Length: 362
Ligand SMILES: *[C@@H]1O[C@H](CO)[C@@H](O)[C@H](O)[C@H]1NC(C)=O
Ligand SMILES: *[C@@H]1O[C@H](CO)[C@@H](O)[C@H](O)[C@H]1NC(C)=O
Ligand SMILES: *[C@@H]1O[C@H](CO)[C@@H](O)[C@H](O)[C@H]1NC(C)=O
Ligand SMILES: *[C@@H]1O[C@H](CO)[C@@H](O)[C@H](O)[C@H]1NC(C)=O
Ligand SMILES: *[C@@H]1O[C@H](CO)[C@@H](O)[C@H](O)[C@H]1NC(C)=O
Image (cartoon, rainbow, N blue to C red):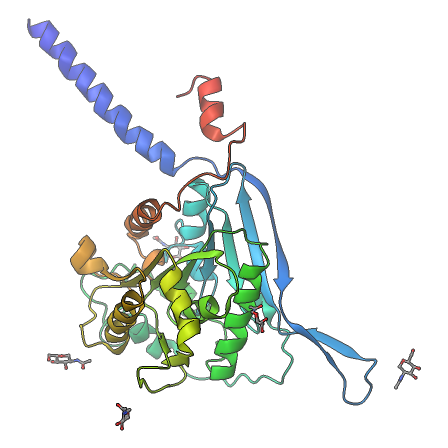
């Protein structure tokens, strides 16, 4: 009897450890790519005023892509405000959303909108004036209430000086002007309408990219874009029938009602806010208003609080690079599942799961 009980306990231990390592394996599966690369999209060709035979091809965006061996049908377009780097790694150099979602078989696209990053071949003169931004970054990214004072529960690796230096150095010049918001949103809309990123697109955005992604949806002529998941969107698009005053550089951006209604046609919009943001924080209040208006026109927009709704404490402005970004990724999984955006594109042999079965390692 005692030995039977012992056997049972052993079996149970074996089973539960099996379950746990299965989950870990799923998260640590090799990344199997069919292909990767990049391309320019949108932009224009301008002629020299001195010699019309001389031209410049400029103001395009740059899309880098990574396509899994057996891809799901939905493409994740990771749209940064400050730098693609935020999507590539966790703040301490650990795994970022790019690899996490490649392991989950989602095609991943890293987007540099016109004039940013690898798309900096502008049609107009641009200027960069060095400003003393490090201290402002610290507060804007919600690492703490004032420079050097981290929130006690922060998900930034506070004691890692290198991590701070890496993060504050990774920024690009943003060109936060109304003209650039339209330029960048339009290029993304052209990309979405080109089918080069598929016909089921989810924008993952951070900060001011949230405003641009909303505007891109209103400018697009297809239904290829299915959802926006905006991490702390700074700026919102509103319709022109509600007497909302336009502002700059972080909105409100006002568009004709008919165009605005395209946001209500998306299967889902999720505005995510981190901890340590009060309800009267301008952009959270605007997110609530935006969701309300989109839903008034039949849409499906929700505000999701990482603290209150998911129990994640100390998240930063860039929650997908936080130390607990695996939990933030699980929430995105749930969102994609709930909205039926997690399906596979069609069967393809040679999936890692099939290989594991074939070689009996499962
Ligand atoms: C532009 O090209 C055309 C056709 O080759 C040529 O006739 C013309 O002289 C060129 N103009 C200039 C300013 O070089
Ligand atoms: C600190 O952060 C840097 C850069 O993100 C990383 O390379 C390093 O491994 C981190 N150190 C620790 C102890 O996690
Ligand atoms: C959508 O169609 C309109 C009307 O043809 C056009 O002006 C606009 O440029 C198109 N948008 C995009 C993103 O191509
Ligand atoms: C529109 O808003 C402006 C300024 O916020 C206000 O002065 C005006 O009375 C409003 N108009 C209407 C029709 O509500
Ligand atoms: C938000 O409201 C609280 C309570 O009414 C107030 O103490 C706080 O100063 C407000 N914060 C902002 C950013 O307006």
